[in-house]
Length: 268
Image (tube, rainbow, N blue to C red; front, top):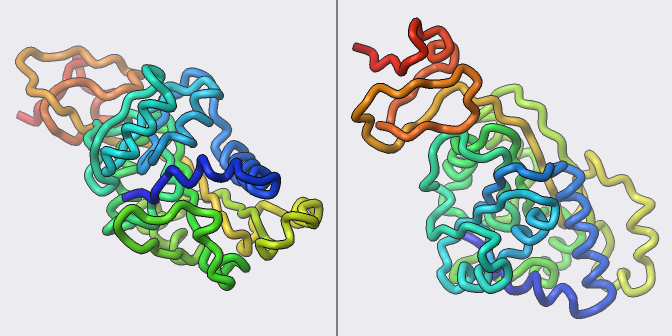
């Protein structure tokens, strides 16, 4: 589900590497605008590099990955400051609307079905989603140097995305949604030892040629999945933002708000 992840640590090797790592993280933060106290899920969290980035911003972070080795690396990096789960992007073990933010950074490329992975991210999100991917049309992609920037796959080859196809996958789930996007790392790899200042003269937002593309969009939830069996009728606060325990059922938010006594309508 995710790339090797440990390569992110190797990005500290040279000044150019550190510069490029900083460019990627700046774009991620610009497009996600994390706020302290928000619940964040990193799908395909790898060794926890980006979990640590959001944790430093005060977020309550959860990571999921299909690699036990990488989860162990993330646990060593973050200790008890993170919740980690073993699982796949296409089948997230979380309730609907559970997280303020969901990220898929260097992970959508390794999913079996990117469309299902995006649909699952939307399902568990009640705020916004960020997707960061490798750009097949960048100079680094054309040069075949993408693996210098991105970690190698654990057991499979990465899928390169075109911006149009990725936005199409998103709008298939959320027709008409507004997508903010941008990219960084525009120059040939060898130029960053002497021409990094040129990189910063190029526009970032709505530029399709960078090696790392980031997209963000909002999610407005309209139903919930409730995961534990209800034995007693449960009161539901009109403005409750978190999913309730109970049996799996979907119901429109306006139906919940209009319930006569504020209790769950079981459809009977």
